[in-house]
Image (cartoon, rainbow, N blue to C red; front, side, top):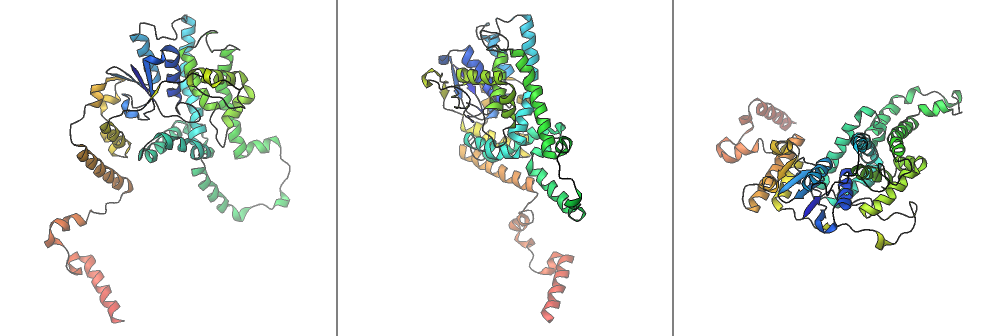
Length: 413
């Protein structure tokens, strides 16, 4: 029995991550439902690459969509290979467009779901709150948003991040308050050039350009076909494209610039997402996206409840902590892509209460290091040695003498 561990469901989809959606679509098309289980563990520490999706095949763990596809193709003798009917040219297209999807598609989702403050606070972070347990609900979403900002920093679209741009706008408005030009001396007519120079319009133009550079090549590759490569069946590229395109089209967010661009210019890709998401992901389309369907015709995914051991949950929490997490991650797992279950689960056998107590102390120490506050730094030596406790102000040295003199002067008035 295969176990596919993914980030939990959101936006009406079985996962909030494009690679997880791609893995779900692949297994739903390549393997019979009775031969695999879908588990929304939302725990990347299960993966040897510290990312989801993660596939457990017997004692072996495989992390990442590409590694999972390669493993299924190799261990099944081609039976679980969706690309087995492709020729050399098709395989070259699959390799090229796979790289294109992972680079261009990821940056668009980063901008739409994470960098955009409105979309992140209204949709993305609440989605994580439903699939994570405390305290990861407070630790992991900001970390993933920071990673998205880092990946898209070269695009210089920080205007989407109102958490930082709002402070800059306030400072600029205060600085220019005394140097404003009277409105009577300014032109009231708006031209295309003046509109294009405004920050909000400039950002939208650039976002539309990025979206077109992503959707355009995929639309040309499809050329009216039901699938991207073949006319009659899905390939691994279709699964990966479904993961990214579904998160671009289907989430309901306050700033839907990405889905609007897709709906207005690429209706064939919208139909592709709607049909494939229904067949592979069990998605029930909204009334504005498609026709009314019989829910009995929509396949059900082989969901199962997560049975993650308690010690692995504690390890996940430890790795989420600042400072402590970077030291806690084993380098052997960071450098490997395939590990057995025994290697991942091999931890010292100690009482659970002791492990919980140690985790609590580590959390407190990490918090104090992170905030720069050490409230017990001066209290611990006096606690263990009563003779060193200061009895008079003069016992504090020069500082005590100064405080004593000031106290004496105050007592004279």
